[in-house]
Length: 80
Picture 1 (cartoon, rainbow, N blue to C red):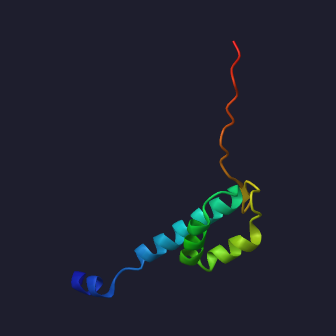
Picture 2: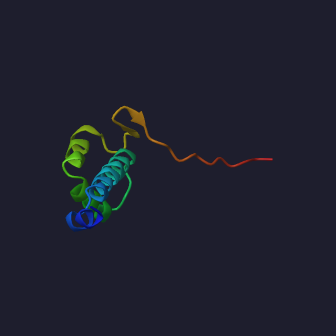
């Protein structure tokens, strides 16, 4: 049974890569950050989910699928 699983492979790893690629692409798109290289890599690995993200999520909107993305806290100078 284990030998059969090793010979046929597992789809769990491929699914994890697909999910993480979609999350990564969505975050980069919503925050308007990330290099072109990584955007292309995650787009290819997460296709077709990333195509939906490209059409639905506005670049730099800080929102993806109705969820607010975490924002970098602004540092304010302290005056004593």
